[in-house]
Image 1: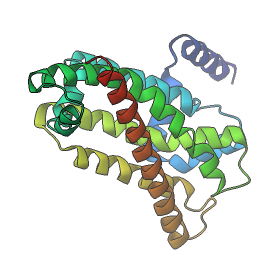
Image 2: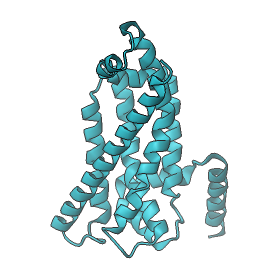
Image 3: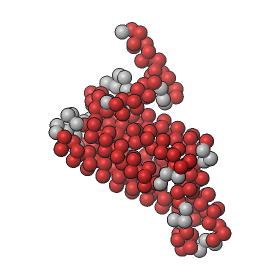
Image 4: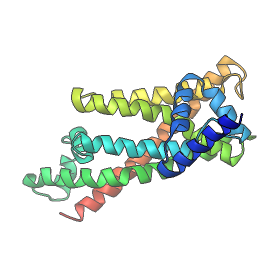
Length: 235
């Protein structure tokens, strides 16, 4: 018992320094294998074996940007998906055609910096959203469970990010995998807990996923609008 407590203390100290440790890896693993157990632990308020999900989410976001940098930079990745979608915007702003590539490079660079802070703020909306599905959860439990639902999709999205870079995976295919992961994680984590029956769990999981998609969609619209306006001011 003393040895186990010592190991947990060491893990927690490592997490304080790096933000990511074996407890974080265990949390990610169990969110794929037994999400209900993780959710119930967060509900009880005694994390024990599991790390706070928000810390894991932030660490994974940082890891994603590191991989993007190693793959040639986030700016080249975003530019790859944007293609000619901004041509109309360039024409409306009276930007010469020969400035198109310059605009895309600057826009993608700004987007890579601004995206996650803005998206993170919007993802906080999932905390009060979760209250609509279970009013008995404390604020701390809702924060942990809300971001725990997002973590598996971020991990899978990390993989599709690499596939997209090398195999030109479409953005729609990548986002569809993310949305399906939202649904599966919520469904498996709440079935038999605050969703007693299969139909109830399926229906609530579908509603929650749709709400997440709307929040995510609005967040990216705001990101694109803000970064485009900033970029236009430089041309």
